[in-house]
Length: 81
Image 1 (spheres, helix red, strand yellow):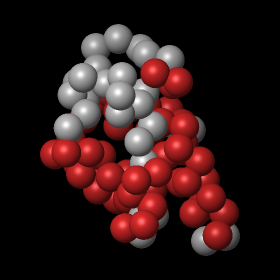
Image 2 (image 1 turned 30 degrees about the vertical axis):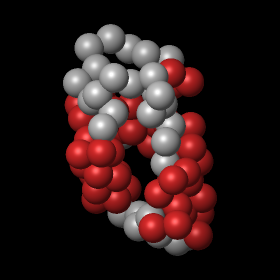
Image 3 (image 1 turned 60 degrees about the vertical axis):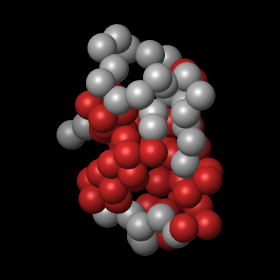
């Protein structure tokens, strides 16, 4: 079974059409050329569906990097256990 992080990396690669393996620290809104409003919405919806989590509107501004997203997913998954 794929880890949470590897699943999220695959989401980033697919949605933003990343051809090379970027360091997770480089998976940010400022460093990904294809990170626009449409792809952002697609990413968020895809994450919610895949990981069975729901983000509050107030959390959306935090979702601007791999690190922030993975931390919020982990936090939400802990609450559901």
